[in-house]
Length: 327
Image 1 (tube, rainbow, N blue to C red):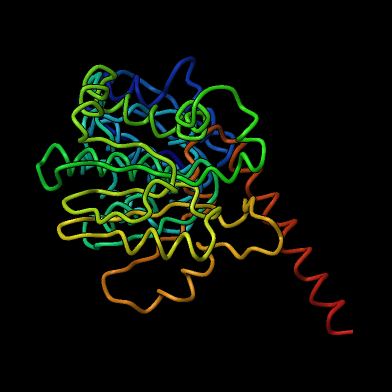
Image 2: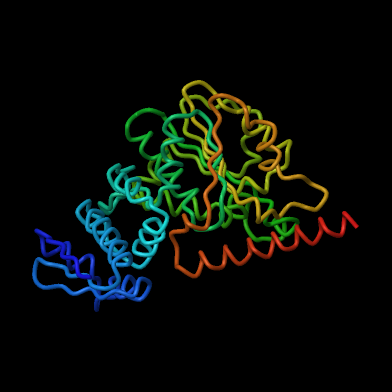
């Protein structure tokens, strides 16, 4: 069976095929089809059901290219995974909503359906918990939404914080004053804000007090009005720290809490404040939990495989522990 797709703009075909046709080679290999470009026409041949899936994937990728997205391996594999489970219609919504524009003019958008749902929840709720593995864009998208709210004058300041628990007792042995000691743990937040504001504008806003990046301990005793507040690495908060942080919220403020419950660095006798919040706050109106998974990973394809492998191992350990307990 052979199907033809007509494309009006040649640059969309170039974007779709990628360097040395690397993008379409992925589709060809995964679906056992042949994809050929003849000017403004794309021909896809193979078994009928596989050709149908390839046509759906190619059309979706062309639509993403038309929205200004650069097509790469991650985009191709994600679209194919969603076509495989029949999510074509939902995919059409991806890429339409630009969250904000970076300092170098790049439009930031949700890249997966999970990310889009996460962004929508942040828009529509006062407190959102973004929980998921590394590489799913939890913190980056939260920062992008904070920048959007700030530039739209929905808030007067941005506050980003994270616990310094990763350093443990070694924090005191690091050189420099307290700010220099904690800066390495806040670096990912500095980098994200610098990319979106531009580093000169970012530092000016810090000097004016409109952007604050600080360790979680600095939040105690404060009330934060007219602010977009992000707590990153929340799996490393204690129950007491989480309660303290959430009760800092003032009027006209929004809170986003991000974390990965599989990477808790707390001592064994301390329960994660993020895990506790899942239980305590799950039925409160205005508070939403968003769970991202390995399908939302937007880093190197190997990251997705690594996350999946660790999840399998964790499940095996939990099953084994349960069996031992039941004996």
